[in-house]
Amino acid sequence: MTLLLSFAALLPRLLLGFCVVHFIWNATDWKSLLVKVFLSAGVGFGVSSLFGFLWIWLSLPLTVYAILESVFAIMLTGWMVFAHRPSFQKMTERLDLTWVLILAAGVFLFAMNLAIYSLQYPHGRPDAWINWNVVARFVYLGGADWQATFLRQFDHPDYPFFMAVTNAITWVFVRAESTWGPIAFHFVISIFTAGLLFALVNHLRDFKQASLAAILFMSLPFIVDQGMRQYADLLLAYLMLAAGGLTFLYLQTKEVRIAILAGLMIGLGSWAKNEGLAAILGISLIWVLTALKKEGRLAFWNYIFGLAFPLLVVFLFKLFLAPSNDLISAGGSSLGKILDFGRYVTILQKAGEMLLNLSGIPLPLIGLIILIMMLTGRSAVHVNGMWMFGVVIGLQLAIYFGIYVLTPLDLTFHLKTSLDRLFLHILSMAFLWLFSWLRSPQELTKES
Image (cartoon, rainbow, N blue to C red; front, top):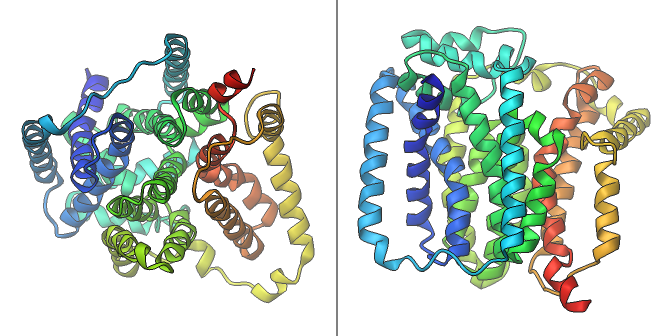
């Protein structure tokens, strides 16, 4: 019963997310609707956690907020269905049954692997015990004293509250700090990350190409492991994929309201994890470039509008509540580290080793990608902004490289405990770029 309640408690926020996305971006073709469905988790959970956090900061009871939010989400969904039903086009098209079955099998196996992992590690892995889930317990159990969470000394008390408030709201409905709450949240985020990758490639290319991208992504044990560890890293990867993918869609369609969602998603990334602040730089670079042309200026300001609210909440959180970040507050000579080229060699060496073992399968992921690129080649379909998207991925990696160069922690220890998760942040975006670049099965069939 608690398991079912935990998933049911997420539904109003998913409905809220879809309503917000649809009101901002009113496209009704089936490909766009599919993208909007898989954006709903990020928007719904993210907006809910922002307002929930502000609510408890005003010393108001979280229980009242959770009930009011759910009632509002259900009423809003009912009104949207009634008011907008005539505008929806047919959401399906004729699809190859074989590819549908292959995709369905991939999704089923992915879901089973997620479920098995959650049963093996119901509390998640170490960082979930000592950081992410314990903050949710402070929010849910602490009442007026929830800010005691910032007194913790031995982990990261400055981490933002996206997951903490989300899981605490689930526990309000479950009426207990059950392990099923975080399990349900991370299960949904894992499914929606794969689903969003599918929906974006489907929008940019076609169904078969999207199926290949999603199946390869879901088949990696690395994704299952990271998804159900109950850390914030796959959540951040999902939000970065959403922001980057929406930016990609804007470059194709020039629909300026998409920019609001792109800004909102990358802003929520900074509310999910500190590394999300770095991700804002890369995504914002593309929007600055679009603003260099007169026709792109409205979209740029829409992007800033979407970014503003979550970034403001993060700023207030960091300024008035959270203690200093351990990497920033620690001492040490930055110049000496920059001039120590041995650190560069160590970082590159460990990064190369990690790439070779990242997938969790005998064949290295980077080798598999190179093999796929050699076998298929570049698509003849032109997708605008490919080079920009590549720059974003490269810039994110460069920022992470700089963090490692300057880290006050033992470099080898820091690399060993975090490098795989930093690669995860950009992996889904890299998959989107790759499968937008590759020839699709449909193209290969026509040529044969």
